[in-house]
Length: 305
Length: 299
Image (tube, rainbow over all chains, first blue to last red; front, top):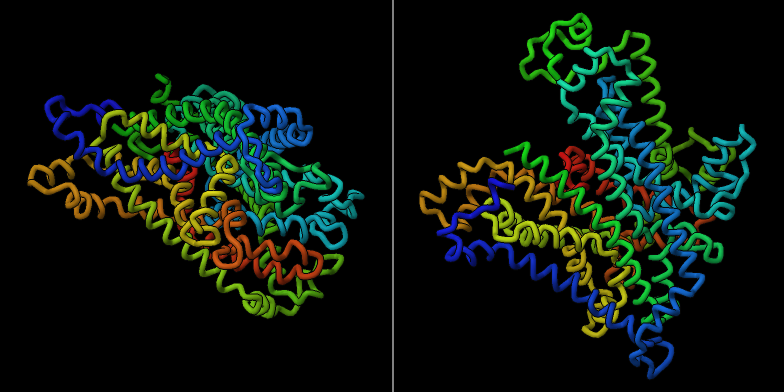
């Protein structure tokens, strides 16, 4: 930062607008498209407004918040959101670390293996969800049932019996490559001197991993967990395609519940209030993430300059 | 750390024995058998992990009857009929909409993002940190929190089911990532180039166009590819703000929810076709993928 952000005192005033000009279109566009609608959301959340009730839309203070926070469906969805996000991020991070360790050595077809392994992240998520629901998890013809039949799990109806676990499986499949790539980048940035020093000190492979590699990876793992959480918290497509939040509301998360309340229940006020609550929750996680991204980013920048 | 350069039999065995000059990081070398076993394990794990994707491609070439067998069938007479059926099901307009939404929004992101990233790196404005913080914080705002007003506003100004609504929203969705990513590329451009051009009296647009652009081309291309992936795969805005006119390919896939029990081969063909363009883009951009996903924080 030190070399970039300090304009010379003399040129500061005259050059200010010339310097700002290239930034302004992007800044104004972003403010208008992302911030204004959110202010409107807050405005809506304070009114009692259901599109099915003509003449509604009066100011109702915090009534919507009270209604939402005492609504078992909302609380269940909040619980599901935490459950789905936490388990997806945890499992995909563990798998990602495993795959990254396997890929972090030279072997026959390494480039091809890496290319194949990132593919689940690229396949259109709605397609991923539908394929897991049908060709993978079908109790009669599904591949998962076939693979697990030696263990007596051949004809389990996964999506109906374990909807949350099924959703998490599809999400883990989709997000593991993301974690793998981050951890792999971390592994490959590990300094040669550190590795050698460890070997000179006579550390075995396991000790090397625990005391040299893992501490080095920590920042990359933290980054993966936080960014992953931010992306996965907003999951809508997988649930929409796989379970529609069902059976009942067993697998509905907050984005899906807000969608239902707004587009199937037409309750603008309550869905807006839910949105505001989700933003507050996300902000808490996001603040942590932002700090971490800044730290990582500024660290690499210092390395460069 | 002082032990690094001590001559040691262990170090000699572990490293290549080359002088301590910039040699690549030593990778663990195993004996033939151990190495081979690890390679086989790696490939086995890889194939199991990508099996659902391979299965999708395989199933897309099946007759429907071959898709419903127990045990699952690997060998069969391949056919392209399922792909033909998908196109017969009016797939082309969805494809056109996706192409428009993706290409226009990516172009707009670059038009807005390249100058902004320049202003935040090469010729930094004051409060650069705050602006960067603002851009990235919009990425953390869950889209569900704004969908209701967007729907209501788009309805009032007659922009529902309009491809330009998606273009604008996808631009806003990708702009923060692009600004951060482009900035990380700008910071790698040697400072001397710009200063030399400025000294010779080149104007700002000229510096951007004929000095920076050629150097930045790979970074800009990588950023564009990342934005394409996100736009192509986006579903939430597409399903809620479009109907028959502007629906994109992820929305096309929802047609299979109701018929899911019947047409697995056709579903697989559609999924393969819908994913293929973006899978190829992702393969091309794979070296830059991690940089885009971490907003430029990790290279």
